[in-house]
Amino acid sequence: MWVRMSSREIALIGMMLGLSLLFDVMPIEMPTVWGMKIDLVAVPIVMVYLLTGFAGGLTAVILLFAGLSVVSSASWLGAMMKSLATLSVIVGFEAARKLTRFDLGNGARQRFLLFAVVAYLAGIAIRIPLMLALNYYVALEIWLGLPREQVIQAVESWTGVPFWVAIGLPNAIQSAIDVFVGLAATIPVLRRVPHLME
Image 1 (cartoon, rainbow, N blue to C red):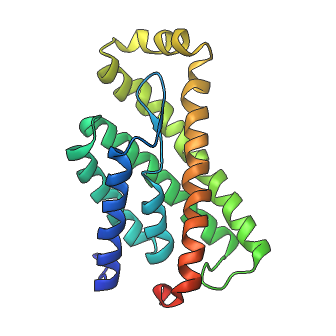
Image 2: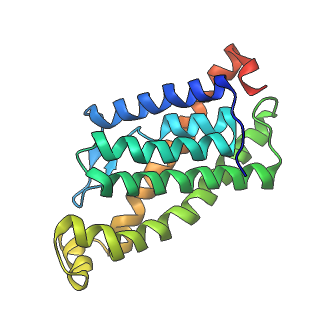
């Protein structure tokens, strides 16, 4: 079943997608040894979710995959990883919204903090196991050109930490940026233009 979107939602998705792709090609990032970048690419997509809801956020993630497949130096592989990681953040937000019954349009400050923390924790509970599995079974084998049996050893020798820490910690940091910067960027927009939530 398709969800109808208003012209305002379509315009917002287009504008934020353009901003995400701009963030991908701009050198505002911290690369890791194995190819992941800690950056601001997902922040506009998080804003789309917060301003339009789950259907808008999901649409933006799908379009992010298509856009990054074209413009990203990491090709379709990096686009897939970034899109699935961003989807896990959005699912975390959706779980937090349902668990805390928080309404971004008129929520109390204490409930806002609870919403943010639950969204972050729910998101990393999905993201870290997903990224561990995808990196081990798919991405690093292709990206590094190594057989799967050598992936863990290679990452651990480069980083000096266990594989799960090498993958999990940067993803936890990236999720913190996505959640907290996304919320911090959305709140002023809602204060100035409250009708965006209507």
